[in-house]
Length: 294
Image 1 (cartoon, helix red, strand yellow):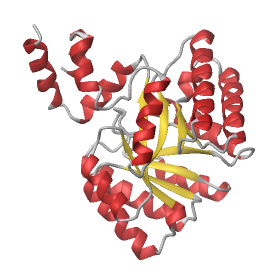
Image 2: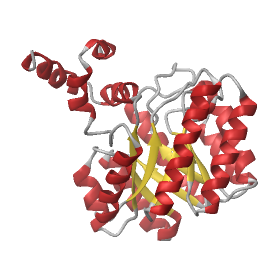
Image 3: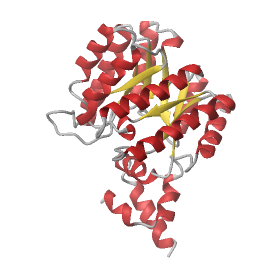
């Protein structure tokens, strides 16, 4: 049902999507980041796109990220970047992906900008974590993501913590995976999230990004932070643009660091479909808007 949204006129779909996407160009992203900085949040720019299939696509994404780093620096924005490895050619040229990532992270390092290696579906989990291991050996401005829905995540965290300084963004995960790989029940995913968060803190993770819009998980995280007496420089809360605004403001008011992910780009439709999978009730609003626009 949700995939049928591809057949809805893009102008109608955009009315839903613009809540979650800064726009189609870097200038749109910069403006969203400025507004977030003014409201007390840091930000992370995410160039929409994954699964590049050619050198040209990967190089275009590389140029956009390098330009974004220059803009973040010149505009003095409190902002990092997030990169999906498949956008940089991981699925068809591992050497290309490594070369591009080193170039981008090196440029970011020169300007004191943090780079998050985003996590994708389970087919590239091992490759993504291996890339992170390789890069964190040479750079201190890089982190990655662990998804609480995956059965393997507990052992992944144990291994990463045992190997050195670790910066992890913990999220539930949005990709649809088989039951032998992933928890499918929402309560199981929440329970896994809680266990993994405590493991990260107990294991001495350098920094933990608590990425959730789930109020129950936020409350558990706050309780855990108080109970373990976690220093403020060891964690931050993270949310997506356009999601859970009231909860985000509550956390800022209570003195927690907050970071908001700011996606932008021409390839916004696939991202919108992922947001719809999280909140399928929105499909009715989009279809209603379509008929009202006829």
